[in-house]
Image (cartoon, rainbow, N blue to C red; front, side):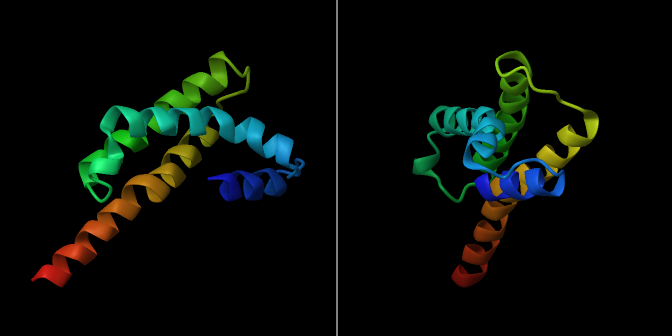
Length: 106
């Protein structure tokens, strides 16, 4: 996630310095940890359902925290990109892992 934020900031001609990256990523990291705790993700690390819940918690929670506590914007293109990238990083990884383990067992 931090790498994604750093690349995004650089592509938008913003500083890719650590403080700027953390400022953008922090609301999503907080929401991600909350999603892990609520789902107890460590118990089922490859569960697609767990991944989807964590993904949605991270997107919704991160956007809310970003807007309400960090006073940062939530433009529609940002919401779309954040949703898709977080989906790929969180839920799609678990889906691929699940499918790969299913094929090994059969």
